[in-house]
Length: 422
Image 1 (cartoon, rainbow, N blue to C red):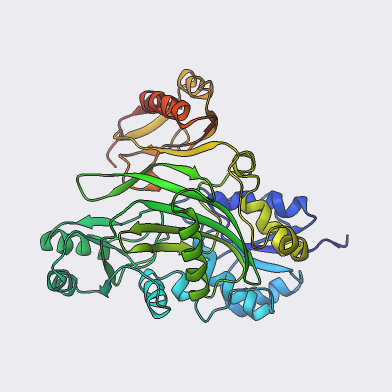
Image 2: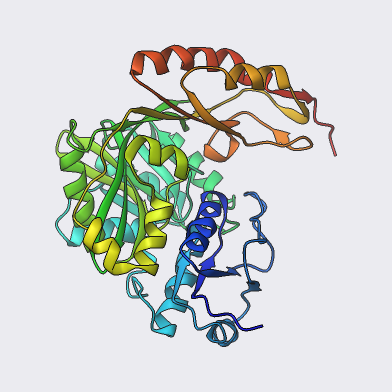
């Protein structure tokens, strides 16, 4: 049976990448999934491959290209962060709209990312990388200003990111990172140390096509620093496009994307507003992790998943309707990520607690991140958080009231037993 629909290729459609297939399908496209690794990454939920016409496992670039050429794809893009490098290579070799490979590494490697911004004259953190903990300590000591941030070169979701307040913490943290693997299973042969950027942190989400961009949202992060030096997510709230530092942040991120060669697709940038102006923490060329199309539509009048599909499948419409424009804040909105100190195996979900969350007036929807049989552990990063709760209302006072209730309910959602030693 012949297929006459255009084909879109998604590489590693983990987590929020699951929202892309319905949007492309709704605009008349079929999908092919490419898995960049021989096995799915155990740190993230296995993607649902049922919406795809075909699912390929990448082994060799020429083999994967030959397989994809049979589908004559319209575009190849990353479904989530792990797929960025392979998607760039495949799209470039197939002659499709792409950010290209010349700066691919700078869009994944945090050290190269910072140096690309520095070369473009943009404010960013001071930094140094090495595989030798003693060299990292020497850099921090020579600089003579603590705290500093120590983290892997390639990861996400605050994985392995520590705030260190003295030389011994830098040394111990560098050893810990070098001996660990990232959430993507990569080894850490080198470790990055950066100056600590003092100030509030924000998210700026955009969609680009041929260098023309639409701003989907600006959100302010609220994090909590744990005693061990880990900064964990608490919640993020939506700013108006003209509110506070939003215009300055948008202008800075536009320059950062230019410096990194980003011309196509969605981007998720994290920026700290320091006393010297905005400074990039990092940017990912994929949709945001707090993505939910319906929620974002209600709060901002659009969402990254729908607009990404529109940009690739109907670029003229995207450019004519959205390029050069910004979202409109329709209501107060918060994405809340709950933490826990619990440890064990989830036996079941407590429906009474779930119902208590569901009836809170400002709770729009929520995702339970651990299924029965899964392991719950004390939260140290985004992937060990327990719930993602989308909240919206007429006022922040209403949301704050319900957020206090969430803090009382969250640890009752999961019925757990102590994990047995293997």
